[in-house]
Amino acid sequence: MNVFLYELKSKTKSLAVWSISLAFVAVFLLSMYPTFYKNASLFKDVLEGYPVAVRKAFGISIDDIIKFLGYYSYVFSYVVLLGAIQAMNYGVAAISKEIKLKTADFLMTKPVKRGSILTSKILSSIVILLITDAVYFLSAFIMAKSVTKEPFNIKLFFMISVTLLFVEMIFLSLGVLLSSVVKKIKSTTSISLGVVFAFYVIGMIQAILNDDNMKYLTPFKYFDLNYIMKNSSYDVHFSIISLLIVVVSIFLSYVFFQKRDIYAM
Image (cartoon, rainbow, N blue to C red; front, side):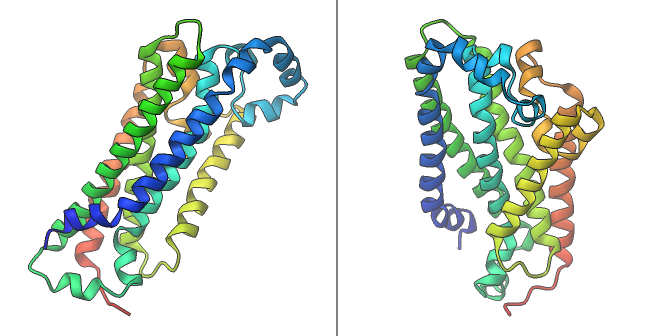
């Protein structure tokens, strides 16, 4: 039994739904840019009327949002939120799905080591995320070229877009760790939404308070889009932290999964 191929096949419908959803968000919101650009002064006045706390919470920079990459980074923040939910859901379901569907005991009786099973599940999730991100990126890039009259920095566009995968890897690894530790998860969706939105709210609070120390508490702040646009690079410090979170979470997942007692009921 090829667990990797089975997992890929079982995620086909999910792949289609998430790919279409992310592409739709990109196409729909970017299609509004010409109108936004044409009435930039009007929108700028409207945004200036918002409380500073609200603008900070939603990552709105008045000086940057009237430019295409600034507008794109604002749109992209919602795409990252969706991507994080997708990745977290895959991670949480890695083990809990078998328990919930009562197929864990059947799976464990097959001549496949536990480590190999978990590896296949993680790799299949990564492949699905890569395909989803590729569909999103192509959709966003084609739309960006069609709605902008002025040239934009393609390198920065790519650097911003690829952070979607970085954030997804963090949430995928955290989801797998959670799945390997918690004995029984009744709803992967509710857990995924709860965890992701909790981190997202922390990010909003951090933006309002402008507390740099709070950035450590949420993956949504590890790849700051304003920092990327200003420096044309990623923050090395938070990039290392992100890598450590992924590596340590996956390592601990294997440790806990190997020692865990698996029951169908």
